[in-house]
Length: 142
Image (cartoon, helix red, strand yellow):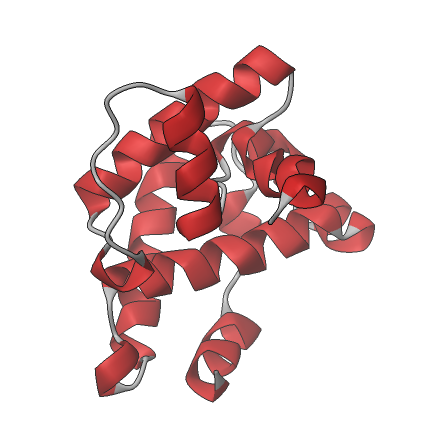
């Protein structure tokens, strides 16, 4: 956790406040790779780095002061839902033909993209951005 905290403490948020989907995606991918490189050997998976980064960015979006200062609202629709087994299970119930979930540690960019696409569609059906699905489903956790 220390290496992840150290990384996000220096992460510039302003670049994530963009309306350009492709630019946001490139910045998210770059930050994921950088974070992955700082994680200890046994924890340095792409999936874990992406989940930790998505949690951090979502929390920044939820913070009124950070959201306003870094214009994060512009990119709200591009923020990803942090993936875990619970979110994956819910998405598999609501979306067809998703790849098998094998865990965050083994998550690849392609599998993540499939789940994020499903999350975007589910969010759209509910009138919310996919980043909010975890909070939306929180009360129904088992």
